[in-house]
Structures are given as structure tokens and as C-alpha cells.
Length: 72
Image 1 (tube, rainbow, N blue to C red):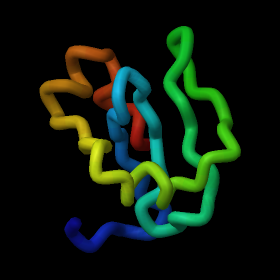
Image 2: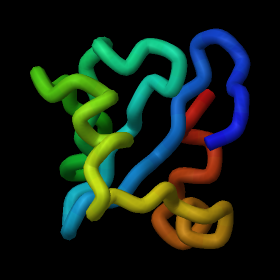
Image 3: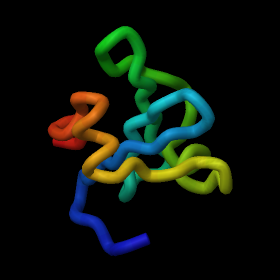
Image 4: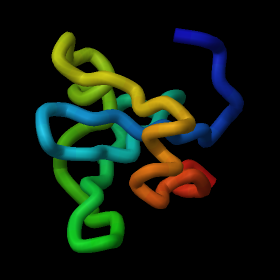
């Protein structure tokens, strides 16, 4: 994982679910993409980033999902 700027979020897929996570605040809650929007979860960002089954989405995958600007 590369060094990130403060407050940076990234998008990960875990199974069929898509999460927006905080890279610099792994204890902060991740958000779940559901019904065209982001929903708060009680799941810590670190639980998503550290799961060996999760994968960060590529720019192409983000574009396909209409989430190219979702980390802002």
C-alpha cells in the first residue's frame, strides 16, 4: 500500500459488496455502496483493507460503476 494524504479514502470490493474506506484512519467506519449511495456501517475501515479477500477497485472499475469521483 502506498503512502496516502490525510483524509484519503479508497474503494474496495469484498465479495459482492463495495466499500469506501479511510486509508489513514483505519478505526473509522467504512461506508457501503447501496442503492446508488453510500451508507454508514459500523465496520472499521481496517477490517476491509486487511481482509485478504478484499481488492481495491481500479480506475476502470470505478468508472464502470459510476464511482470515479467517490473518494473525494
